[in-house]
Length: 254
Image 1 (cartoon, rainbow, N blue to C red):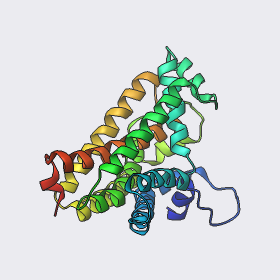
Image 2: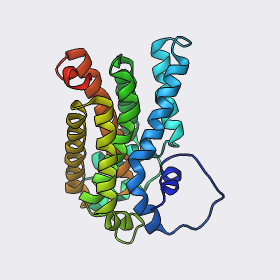
Image 3: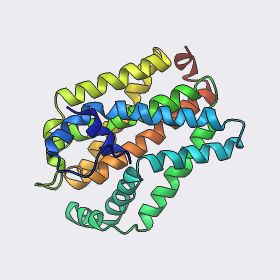
């Protein structure tokens, strides 16, 4: 298992020239997906600290949203758009999968992208100390753990595709290792409340996975991106809501 493969797979970072890589090696690198999320979270936190007081708060949060999308190459957002077009535009599993193969963004995909980015920006703008730093650092790691949950929980919808290897290799070591990393990071950031956040996110990812499987007969690379983006935004909203509504804040504040 190579953590550098996970870094290259999930971000725009390229450590060496293009080369042939065994897809099974990349699949096994799922164990390090949350660790890559922690690096992304660290970048968010660093940018937040650097730009705080330099930019107006609302603009600062817009920069964080755009920066996170840029660091990942927009890969997961593209998957979200394709998934929305297929799931909402087709009436049968085969029709939905066919629509998702089209690289063009339709009306459903555009609406899904705009809605998610607006919600993510609003959630970040609602994050205040003492929860802000922990959320910026940990939520990206939890969201990438959710990808491994989705990969392990549902078969690949297109037999023969490269993601079949991801499904086969996800259990047991990558799933357990990724889960352990995500849980440890969440607990270190939020104490006992971190287990609540971890559990909520995992349940949301599993529920979304099973719903998509019922519509498509399985999952695809696009749907993995959709699961990541939706659960990441949802957890930012949960932490922001916990702070504003006080319903979870006593658990999350150490």
